[in-house]
Image (cartoon, rainbow, N blue to C red; front, side, top):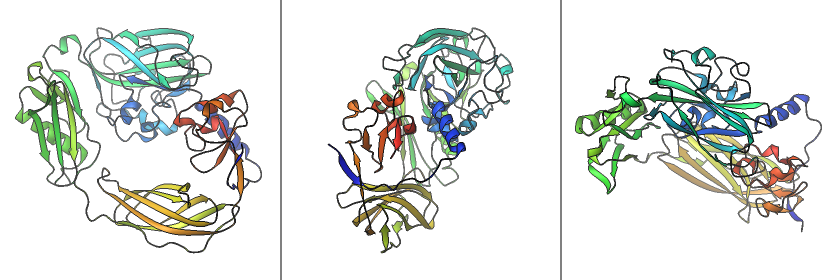
Length: 487
């Protein structure tokens, strides 16, 4: 049975040829997605918080490195090997000896494990490693690598997961490879997944510190990381909690208190905690292992190591932040003459804050259905926001949530009543997404969570409407245009 929703105005006129080209390029760009999950690719380490200042890679590690197949003979240009030449991920091409988190490799038998956000058949997998004597402060080029892969897997055009093509999921099998015996210390591994049914390949670089064999018999085992992801304020505390088979060990746990804002900078409190651990412990150390085996603290991500006799098998990091009691946020005023036209309205409203905040605003109708939403970073002071609303005339509620950007230590909320006048309308739909998703077919119309109606595209891409993944939520997911048409 058809259902009705608030009217949507008709988009007018023509679409420029540039917009059509952009749509086609975007569609090709999202044909397949995946990343190295273990050891983590440079981009996935960004999402895990091990790397910082990563640009778009932090949010889309599965899209990083998508480029033309054919490396090393053809394919991506030198200097853009890590990003695949995609501007959104250009930060991945920054290269220095200290820029990226390094996964410690203690066993030359390594199992490469991929995760797929949108799987496609694979032709092959290749794993390259930087040459001995490579310069880690120069951009990655073909000259940086041994151009014969140290590991090759013939995938034979098979699906890499136990699900239909396009689905999300872990790799069906890991790739067992051997790190060459002459490789030790800091290297970059380039893993390439060549897609079988498109012209693409995915480049994933992994930053490693190889301490296998002669570098590893000193008894130190990696048991965690001090990963400083946020700035702290005076009075905040950080505790490295040592965990054994019997629970937390007070003997091997260490806590520091931040003295001032300078000490609260991420790189500084990580260094302070690592130093305190090394001063107070003998069977636990914090820092980065050099090629000579010495473990010393750095101003950045520090690893945690433990001897077997300590019983410590992992560390958990607790950051105890104080609320910013003086932070404030409110809707400073709201208009009284808002008029809908064919169910649409661009609604302006001012927000007053005394801190830099991430703001989320939602407008709810009388039935508490969201009919408008907005997220925006605002500076301290008065800021005018503008929300696209699609609803019917009547009383609404404007809900505002503000979170301070200092690690999210403080949340503020406000609520205001808003009356919308003018005209509404209606439009048919078959389901409220994702209800009945298994039955979707070309032409099915759904009301999505953004309040808009979308129609499932014709075949052959029509079956993508049935993929129950956040990437394909109509109007919201990163790849929704692959499957849906806005009505």
